[in-house]
Every structure is written in structure tokens, then in C-alpha cells.
Image 1 (cartoon, rainbow, N blue to C red):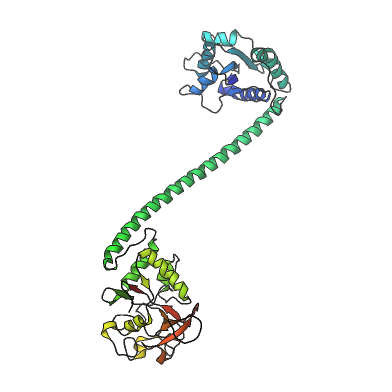
Image 2 (tube, rainbow, N blue to C red):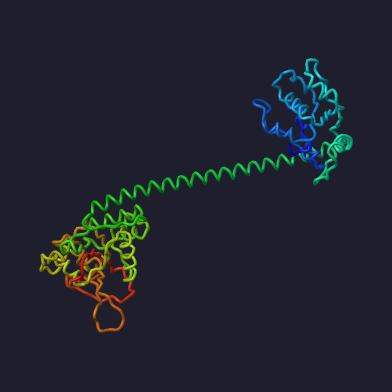
Length: 432
């Protein structure tokens, strides 16, 4: 068998452990490969590691501490088993008597103990100021003739006090390493658990999203949805809310939202949270390009064709569609019944949710007159250079004559104002 160690140290844990550790340290400092099993309990099943270490060593060093052989009359005693294996493997046995503490071999000890401890010369090691001298003498007389000399490795202690300090430093270092390894292992386990939890949660979320998507597609079957698997729960809620608010404008080919686009739906589609206080208020301070970036995201999530209405489509909806209302304002000739404008708004925008005390038109559309001017996908013809878009219906700062169903104004390209918002249509045919 391949020789992995120069020396195997066998000892009785009670009374011999400190001697054994000092011997291991001193011999390793002097370049020898030493096996010492001090991390395992020396009871239970005899370790295969011990067997391999004894077989893989040239020298079997036996620490003769006080009472070392007291239990060797028992066949299952570990020290006895180690000695018998060393004899069987014909190892060079070197008994070591630390500080002349050995108190002899019991009369009932088996022959193997007599052979190992009685037939071999004892090396007396003095664990004091001359510790290094006695160790070096043992190496010279008993180890070198058997396996040769070795080159010292780093610091070489000479006294017992020096060796104890080295052991304490080594123990401190080992404790630090063990703690570091434990901490790293803990965080690795934590990371693995967190990763597993993340993927389990993600899988459940994905499964829940699939169920939610199927539910949405079924509930809005007339819309022919093709919802992205990447849609989040927040986005699915916003899509559901938006679709529930859509009203047919022209048969089932063009639908229009009952309300001005709200901050709640806008933010959710874009993956941003929104406070409950703000979620029903119209989206303002966004440009024409901002709106179409939002529409692109919404269409990507739903597979539908949301757009801004043309000015003609907007007015058609404000007049009640095929009902062809003839009222000045959307739903009434009484402006205060249906519109937030300069004289009743208090100079501020109001939520667009049908719960603010203003009525709707015959298509159940709210705030078509007043509140915020609604951008349309129609250029505003002024004969002036520079892009302008049409805004319809007036706003909360407008005069009464500017919030009629026919009211239109021009909005320069890129404009962002607190009085300008929009309303979406869902198109499944060509515009009017």
C-alpha cells in the first residue's frame, strides 16, 4: 500500500491527548508527515480512515501515558485494535514515555500489548525546556534509521512553552477557519434556499399568471386577446380594468374607454406603483410621443390595437355615436351636469372614474367635456410651421364655450401640460 504518512500516533484520549498533539506539532515542524486522529470520538465503529492511516504509515508511535493500557483487556478497545493492526502490518513501533508518566502494563493485558510496549525500547520525551532536545534525539536514533531525515518546515519549537503557544495559535486559526467556513456554508445554504424559494415562487407566479391570462382571455373573448407570458400580475390587473371600461363605439370594430386614461392604469402597464389617492386621476404632463410609447407597451402585452382616436372619432363618441346627440356638451346642455371647467373645477383636475358627481353621455362616457383636454391622432391645421396635434373637449381651466363636443385646440409637438391627457380606443377596423 502507498505510504501516505511517515508516522501514525496512537494514544489514549484520557491523559494522552495533549502529549500526542505536541508530538505531532514537533514532528511536523521537523518535516515529517504525521497522522493524528484527534477530531473523531474514539468509540463506536472502528473508522476505516484509521485503518488506512495505519497501513499507510511507516512508523507506529505509541504514547504511553498514565493508564494507557487499563482497558486493553477488552477486545473492542480502540487502542488495542490499533496496536494489533500495527503488529499485523509489521510497522516499526516506537513507544514514547512522556515525562516518565507510564505506569506499566497491566497483568491481564493481551500478548499484543506486551509485544508492542514491552518488547520495544521506550523513548523518554521530557515536556519542558529540553522538549526539542529529546524529540531530536528520538528522531536521530529511532526515526532516521527507519525512514531517513527530513527538512524542517518553517518555525521549529524547542521548548514545551513554545510548542503550547504554537498549538494555541493553530487552534485559534483553525477556529477562525471553521467559523469562516461555517458562515460561508450558512450563507451558501441561505443563497441556495433563497434561489430555490425564488424559483418556486416564480414557478407558482408563472402558473398563477397562466391561470389569470386564461381567465382574462375567456372573460374578454370579444377582444381576441393574445396576452404576453411576461405580463406581471400588476399589468394583468391594469389590462382587466381597462378592458372592463371599454364601450363599443362602432359595432364590435371600434371600442372607446369610458374614462380618460388614469394614472393607475398608466403606471401599472409601465410597471410602476401608484398610490390609491392618485390612481383614478387622469394622466397629464405627457407628450404625444410618451403616449405612443405607452400604447406600444400596452399593445405588446395584449396583442391588441389600442390607439388615440382621430378627432372625428372622438367627436362621434362625444355625441353618443349613432345616438347622434345634439346637446352642446357631452351628454347635456347643462354644462354643470357633465363638465369640470373654469367656473366649477376650483382650478384643479378631478378623478375620472364616474364618481365625481358629473353625468355621462348616452354611450356611458364620462368627462368628454372638460376635466382634461384629450389628445387625438389628428394634426391640427393652423397653417403654421411646426407639428401640432388636435386636443378635444377642453379642460378644467377652459371657458364654457371651449368644452363643447366640437371644441378643438392645437397642441405643439412635445408639449407636456397639466391640462392635457388622453382617452384610448381599441381598433379592429380602419378609422372613419
